[in-house]
Amino acid sequence: MRKRIGALLAALVLLTGCGAGSGIAVVEEAPEAEAEMVKYVALTFDDGPSPRCTPRLLDGLQELGARATFFVVGCQVVKDPDIVQRMAAEGHQVGNHSYDHAALNQLTSRQALEDLEKNDALLRQLLGDGDYWVRPPYGLLAEAEAAALTVPLVNWSVDTEDWRTKDSGKILDVIYRCTGDGDIVLLHDRYQNTVDAVLAAIGHLQEQGYVFVTVAELLALKGVAAEPGVTYRRA
Image (tube, rainbow, N blue to C red; front, side, top):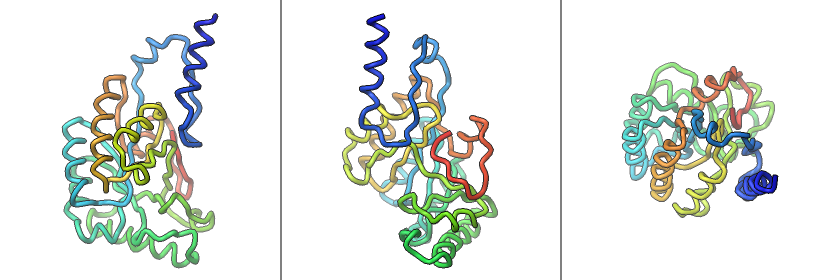
């Protein structure tokens, strides 16, 4: 009994420091059985593409057999369209992170929607017709504008704060402590330290039964029917 209580307390300690919304940890009766289960996670990258970092990240993802979701910014896409085309060609999901990375919740409704529509049109021109799911900058979009969208919105359940720390060790620590089955992890493909941390984390977590998929794949695998105008933070 003491051992079981100790295990539960240890699990709670490990969760300390994880961002709100990262999900409720379930302590299994049989840890060895849990280790054998397939666990799905979606890594998401904002603010790209970056000519310095994104190609190396794509190389690593391809080598490791992992897929991810890239929420790209239109003003960066026009500079490096070939990188975005490569993302799609290699099986990654490409999403809309606005054209100018403005705080959409501080714009008028018309301005916010026009910004998103401008990037959507750019992605359609570059990649063809499709549903380019939206992640608003800073995860913020007024409810009325969200309801007007014809695609789902995606936020996150694990925030690595890689943009703040720019420290691969700290990024790894958050990923290892906070990531679980069904989580959506927020990262940025504009920092070399992020790329270093992500590629190290993928190999380690794959050994523990994790499979890295796109957000659309994650929701489908978990039986979640994604709806337009609805924000998803995990599956």
